Length: 420
Image (cartoon, rainbow, N blue to C red; front, side, top):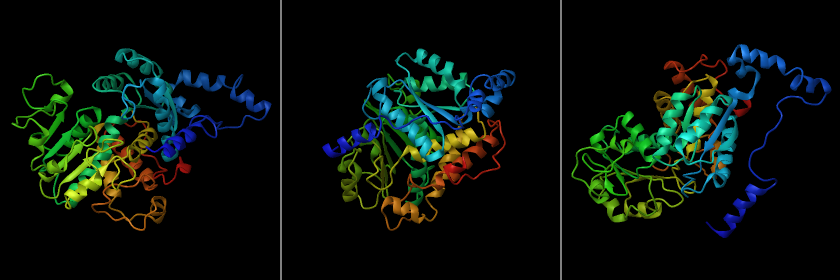
């Protein structure tokens, strides 16, 4: 990052006042009567009503449109274990995105412990304050047990976005890329370089969407994860199968898909050349991908490529998913975000990329044209149709699978955050 960009980023977070979010009043507090209703004595009436019927908290408080973004700072962006205070700008950013894209009020909470049970206890004790909880930047493998336990203990949706948000957006783009390349998920040979939370969630979701375990190879720092390999934890073991492949060199030969969730410059042009005709390369390491897009395209003219960066085509960006997934879940008061809701989000995102792109999106991206194809396999974050399409699909899936406590909303589809 250049010095100018560094300073611009620091200025953005500091001005016009520190941080990126604030709390505003949603009702009048001007007169003496307003204050009497807002606090004493009037506030006693909703208190008594909620005490008799806890569901009325959704009617008389912000709970139904409030999401907490919670972390312990052990996996901040791609920077590692920087601690809770250093993670706060990221958590505030997530809260900003919830409000900007889905009209969801959000607060950030940094829990200062690396002990998983302490973290679980802290989150579980405050969970009922919120309509949903977005876990963020928690390192693997602790994140898996933390999320699983909180889902079991809490009565509101718990969603670790580093896992599932990444997986949902990746799967949407990958399915479209395979379709364009004339291939199917059921037949594709997939190689995943990386075995952290995002990689495991991506591969798990791809298996749910039809990928075959024997065709899906995961590679960690020690090489291919195969049946019988020692030191493989229970989360990686799901992707072990019988194979003689031991290295990336072995596994990538004749592969249809390379999914990189690892580190910079780990996919060489020589290895890219050994992939099958019409390959799909998702090099999602940030800020530097596993292979530079210009180098990849110079090496293989028949590939479709995606990265995690906004300055290249086909950005895999979690903001395409999590605001709208929570919007749909909140609007039907879902008790959880289940696999069917995630798959519904995948399909809604991928189908939107096939629709004509509105002029406002082209203007926002500084482009003259965008059409479904190798350079456009996934919607742009500024596409306002994501709110209507993804939220509606998620809400319907929640109703269909019995985790919704309200019927499908009569006011759907939501076409603007002003309609929330």
